Length: 155
Image (tube, rainbow, N blue to C red):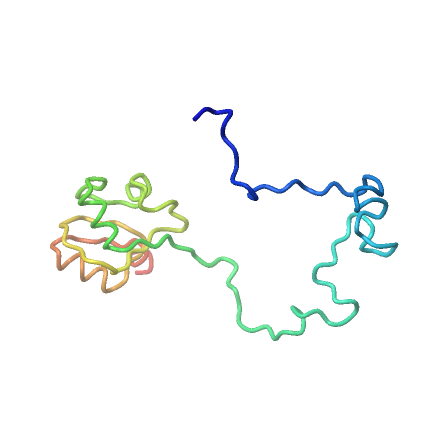
């Protein structure tokens, strides 16, 4: 096979319709927009508008409150940490920066929170922003230690 033999699958690509290019094209003159009116003009944005009727998003009841400064944590499970330790990507001392560098966590956000899903047997020292109670128990049961920054700041 050569580079000039490469083709897309039949039917995978479709030529785009060029509108407003004469009567022979089938989409000439008004280009499929009908005659006159707001929708026939360019620069129209009427997505949420329902012709004077109260729009759906305004008719629905609003409840609750979204905290504007809420914290968002990157979540990681113990089972995955164990997998990365077995693969040799993480050592005995694990910090949030090392979790990001190893590729286990994409970005720290407001910190990393450890949850207890999965099997954990490594004897490691973890230092993270947050951890569930069961995650702390699992790490200590395996003989390791875990320091949670959020608790220290609260105390």
